[in-house]
Amino acid sequence: MGIIQTLNLIHDYITRDEEGNEVGTVRALDDVSLDVEPGQFIAVLGHNGSGKSTLAKHLNALLYPSGGTVIVDGMNTQDDDKLWNIRQEAGMIFQNPDNQIIGQVVEEDVGFGPENMGVPTKEIWERVEESLKTVGMWEYRKKSPNHLSGGQKQRVSIAGVIAMHPKCIIMDEPTAMLDPSGRREVIRAARALNDVEKITIILITHHMEEAIYADHVFVMDEGKIALQGTPREVFSEVEKMQALHLDVPAVTMVAHELRKAGVDIPAGILTKEELGAALELVPSVASMQSGKIS
Amino acid sequence: MALFVDDITYVYEKGTAMSVNALNHITVEIPDGQFIGLVGHTGSGKSTFVQMLNGLLAPTTGRILWNGQDIHEDGFDKKPLRAAVGLVFQYPEHQLFEADVLSDVKFGPRNLGLSEEECEKRAEEALLATGLPKEFWKASPFDLSGGQQRRAAIAGVLAMHPEVLILDEPTAGLDPKGRDEILDMVRDMKNHRKMTILLVSHSMDDVANYADRILVMNAGAIMMDGTPREVFERYRELEPIGLSAPQTVYILEYLKEHGLPVATDRLTVDEAAAEILRARKQRNV
Image (cartoon, rainbow over all chains, first blue to last red; front, side, top):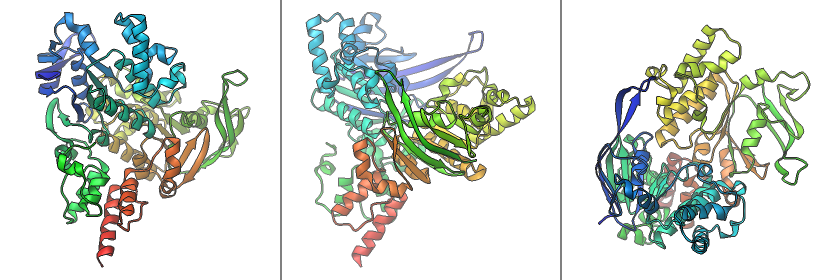
């Protein structure tokens, strides 16, 4: 069984007038069913207002369904008794690291989650060490978060989530505010967690390049899943993606332009290595056969 | 009405143990009608620098000249300067506060002491320029989507009729289409109203696609100043300071290493595809 399942999930936001009376509803999620296997790396794409963040908030019970159900590791998010277990199993990372860091010192911030869960002190410190080492921030443990770069702060936020030993981490545009090196750091950390620790990752992003490593991509539009498949399947649909207000990775777009100009290469090229192989400059690469970029 | 930055430094918490040199002897001219991209990693001094340009921060040493006049000289009136140099902060939608969009956009011009009629006219023009549909003008800014809120907030600065428009990461968190729409609008401002644009961005692809000139900041200093091609030609120097080249450069570099005779300084997808086609033709001759 999947670690995260949504079944016909519906979410309506209620709009109110100045007196607080209900004047209508806006359907943000419309019959979304998905099933995520443990250990998968999932990317969720979609334009602003397509329902991505609303979906993310359902996955750790920050929102409750207006219709349908959400099951996290066998627990129904509408079961109040399970609320804290769900939030511990499914950790969440948001866009702005400054809104997520509360400690004066890095290691205190990371220890905050397990401390709240009532983990014994000795084990808290073990978890802090293990989490900071996982994201490569152990040497910064005594620093003030204020003196870190954006990418480093976001890695500390991730360490804070890992310290709670979640099975799944939902990242809602974790790189939107970061410079290129910060973005690389965070994506590398996310991939390592998935590869090494086997933590299920659900990455919501506007950067198409970040989605090419995913096992499966969901593209949202108007609260529904408009397109899904492997990165190659999804990014092969250049025109469809553009109609959904999205891009494809730059290399996919270059290859698409070459195809339009009559060059005989396959659709859905995802890396420069694949383009080199398609243009017969280098022997073909393993990823084209296996379908998975490593 | 060009801006001239004359050898400025800025020290945060000067004289304390926490003292940090945020800006280190920056000299740069910002002439009329240029689209300038300002890039640098987090903490390189970009935000401190842009706050100097409309007098929100005063340099520790050095001068900022507006039309030849020192803006921190005794008797210099900063109010017209702040209207002329418009600053759109990161996540400007967090600063929306009025009951409806139109009133929010009118707030700036009203503070300039303009007539109600003039304020209304400017607000409508600004909203039209940002492409926010009329049906939203009377709505509460808080009922708009993120992308719409951002347009409303930018309109609030445009209604001040700035000559220089500084935007700090205006596309952060926007989807690709929203990003293109905002940047196209900004380019129109430059082309049709001769506005000077200073775009602070973490996206190398965006500055490569839109800017005439790129300033690269590192450790509080301007490390490079040139056209996008000139700057991104030196991409190996950009990587150690947390930046990168547009992705097309890496694609072309890889193909060149593996025997396709391409030039690597093509910064957009169309240019890169054309260059690959050219090189293939050349090779087959």
